[in-house]
Length: 165
Image 1 (cartoon, rainbow, N blue to C red):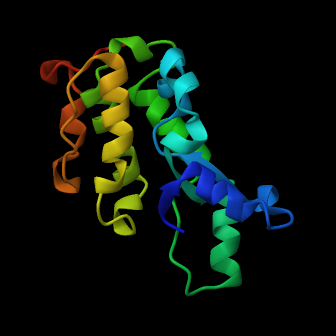
Image 2: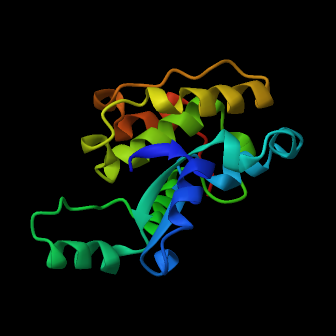
């Protein structure tokens, strides 16, 4: 299904019995980074404003997909893996220390690290979500870096990355 608005995907998957046992919808921009903007998210429902992925519920489901259909493409992007990687880049409770540019860099780096860049060819679909986040925080629109610029070098103190422990 690729990346699409959460509400559109939710309406489609509601029709599938047992969907939640194997798959889930994962917001691309972590909800904890959006929820701190309560006055904005209350004005625009999260389900309408943000993009999501349909992902295997966990690594076991992703592996089972390959077992059932060996021609399937390996999926490393599962919700828990994304959340864990984002937590190392932006620890829980320190969200306020990070700019929208840093949130964008961390989000896109995480997608790339989990090989999502192999099936999400363009990141333009996320522009509106990051524009919304920037406007809500009174910051400028972040530069959505191309995949090849998203390296671990971005996340160092020398590059201004907050060192939250």
